[in-house]
Image 1 (cartoon, rainbow, N blue to C red):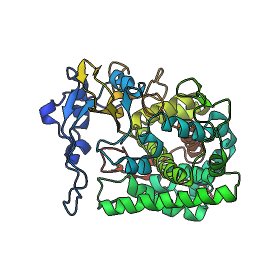
Image 2 (tube, rainbow, N blue to C red):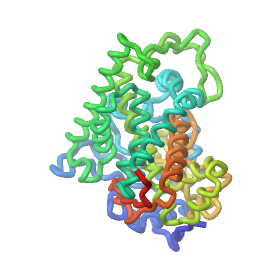
Image 3 (cartoon, rainbow, N blue to C red):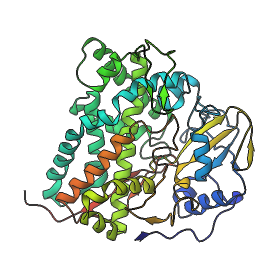
Image 4 (cartoon, one colour):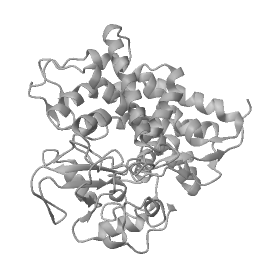
Length: 444
């Protein structure tokens, strides 16, 4: 089995500094998370200084601090109780103005009833039935990527393989011309590259990238209102909740009828578009990249999958997502006084769910530092911790990861990374910027 060394010791609260990205990106990260899991109750941290890294100008007022949730049970408690823990004004640690939070984060920064209304509409584009409709397209595009690269024998895995499939699929679903894909890719890198000077160095760059994507989506939505086609934007813009309510998958029931007649406005579509192209591209790209790196480190696991491509596919995908945990954390705010993990949390307190720690929780996962493509059960939080904010695109992401590796194995079964990945400097996204790979070239 592929196993990484579990941390031999943990760091105490006084030794952990989340504001120090160097510590977070270094070998002490797992010791930090282990220390948080082993702590009696929750651990409270001060917030970093929200200042422009180049000018030093204060961007947001200093925050009050937050409780860190590192254990699986605590993350689950908060995720599944949306009535006690709200997402607005921001799912990020920093407090954002409500309008900015909804603009940059769309439905992930909303609560019921507004969240329920919008999610009820956009769910229609990401049901298992809808994903099944594009299954042939996912396979075809993954095959084209693998076949095109096969004769080369080497490439940058992130930009030329891992990023290409999810980017192409989400843009095709939205009706975005292929000629615009390179710019969409650049903008998503900027938006999720905060903290990494290579990706974004000023707040102005971040806001400009967000505004450009929002405006693109807004224009797309306005066009589809007048000129509908067969893409998801057209279906979303013309969808209207009927008189019988709609299926609410998060709560297992139907809406009470309050939202009848609601449609997405072009502005709402613009914000949702921003979220969709960023999350639908980056997180799946990250999982695929980490999957290849893990199988390079633990070739026995790759050989195991190669020996049973169909039979191991489902569990392999879940383990890759657990291992990668593309989104490191999200925040909620307590609505009322509540006890979490034995700690009294007051109304208005921030709680931050560290999914990467929950996915290594020894209380839930046997030998959590073992990369096991057959791991069962695997109650990971790579798509969130459940509840109404569970990842909208989980079904699509699972399909893309599985199909991409199946096509990689078909064309380049001996593929491996030739150097350690160049990691994104971020405490929010567990991203890989570049990773060189090689394989035996196929005959063109």
